[in-house]
Length: 435
Image 1 (cartoon, rainbow, N blue to C red):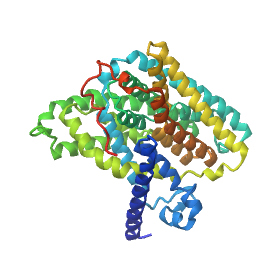
Image 2 (cartoon, helix red, strand yellow):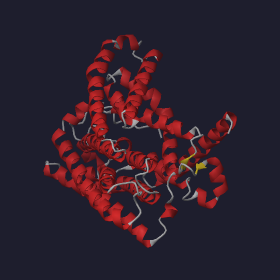
Image 3 (tube, helix red, strand yellow):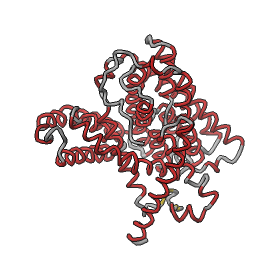
Image 4 (cartoon, one colour):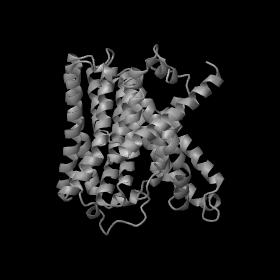
């Protein structure tokens, strides 16, 4: 395939993906759903589950399938572009994340985070134990321990970037509900990635590598916050001119983001972690504000939908072709919803949060979306799970994310009561994302 043909194909892919995401987004908006949910659904519909079923030749031409690798054709610009969009978005989420507002509700955030990890993790472990010897949901080279750890990690994840976009969509920035959910979600995701590192190390028969990866990640966070951030604060004056971030300043920020993404990818974790941590370390004020304003619009409108589409292209709902497999899919969904939602609700209540706000936190924490897709894509690419279990987990990720906004609206009939006087006027989270 020539470069000219690849470029032509990529431009057609972009046009189709963006058009379809916006059409689905118009329908989703009428149902009270944010654009991010529409993009998840659109990605699945553009895959073999609908487009490939209705018009297989056109779907295969537009999104080639490499049968030898059981993945999308690597001779395509779609995958690297989708990864760039995801990394840039996580950098923006990090720049918007205010650690100071989490401190106000630290006790509740920690309790919700622990409950939201432990209970669904145990549900996932039990489900993996049941499925391992009775089904072909895990590949032959996956051990029972690896299956239990992987499904446990997949169950306890919270889609932090999707959660952030829903909180922005609902204007919950600076409120107890928003800050507790964001703080707990950040801890949940970090822990889930550590679990995934252990699973991958075990899968590759290299336990030392797992602890090395986790140690390197901790070192990376320390270097970013105690070395890189202070340097940026010192040179801030040279990066800002007339109350605006200079082009040089923006390039420096992007270079640091790419270096962080490269490093965390190198140590066996995902590039999004490096990007998020680097974004969180950006000096607040002009630098963080202009990074968000200049990167976010194009990323959200153009690049991020590519990642949802790429994930959807891997999903074959048609593989769930029996009542038993759909029963398993239902069990995965039930375990995810009850394990995460109920546990987070009870933990929030135990720390003194009123019932309706606690229910809202449990509902928001049940959002899995983006991060779930990342983890299960890794599991599929590494050969840990089968395509059938992948399809079940994608359905779980989409349904739990679809549930979040309608359930929240039903619980929080009067959203104004979730905006206490303690909320700060400028938290960096209240602003609506483009799209």
